[in-house]
Image (cartoon, rainbow, N blue to C red; front, side, top):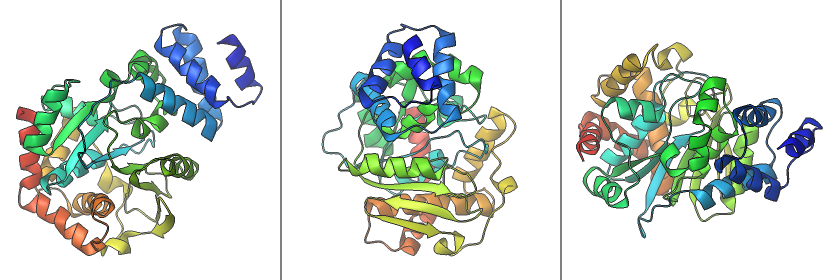
Amino acid sequence: MKIILEKLYNHQNLSESEAYDILFRITRGEYNSSQIASFLTVFLMRPVCVEELTGFRNSLLDQCIKIDFGDLDSIDVCGTGGDSKNTFNISTITAFVLAGSGIKVTKHGNYGVSSLSGSSNVMEYFGYEFTTVESKLQKQLDTANICFLHAPLFHPAMKSVAQIRKELGVKTFFNMLGPLVNPANPKYQLTGVFNLELARLYQYLLQQTEKNFRIIHSLDGYDEVSLTGQFKMLSPDNEQLLDAAHFGTSNTTASELFGGNSLEESAHIFIQILQANGTKAQREVVYANSALAIQCIIPNLSINEAKRMAEDSIHSGKALKSFKKLITA
């Protein structure tokens, strides 16, 4: 680690193979917490390059507990986190909106780092039991159209640095990796990232796969469609600058997206929205993210048609029903 740290301190990038190897060694417990924290901190001081991100991703994927759902056409809706905005659980609610619309969702998630309540926090709060057992996850998909893949269980490298990440309390390159290392390898992906440079790195990496994807970054820093201003959407062969008018709605404000001051408050907001009792701003943000995810899977739909599907999932109770089925499955 000393040689690697000296290289990084001298403003040199790691090669893909070096990045792969260092993460493999972290997983094997070869370094102490101070060394790991120092390593993670470097990437708060400068951007990760494409070779480093590729090496980190490949190392995690090669070591993860893989899940095989056969030819299932599923989607993951997962943000990097780390935007320090403390919004309500937009991507997790979006996942249930999609499931309520009949779309299979293999949701990859983790505990919050820069926010109070990540997707794993809220799912655990409601009694969901994390598992790596493929038959249980398949049953959840069959009954609820969704299963939840808790990242630390599937990725030993993530688990080994969980406490250090929690103590640091800021985004690290593990936030960058989360959406790239879903162990079920879904064919579709809607991913939010916390800056535009990372969005373009993601686009480059995902273009090397067979996925149909949409990468989202709101220009005011959100790792999702926040409707607080303009946002970039990158797909396999396109890049667009969009705003609230694209969805036939008006801008929201940061205060309207606030996720609460405690896990209990976050969970209350979460269930209120699923019960169709959210505020107009909360609902519109969920519909916007859901509509883009639906279009990713069904590209011949107009944005208005996709949004109506999302609205129906909430107002008919199908999204809530999917949530309840998952919790009891």
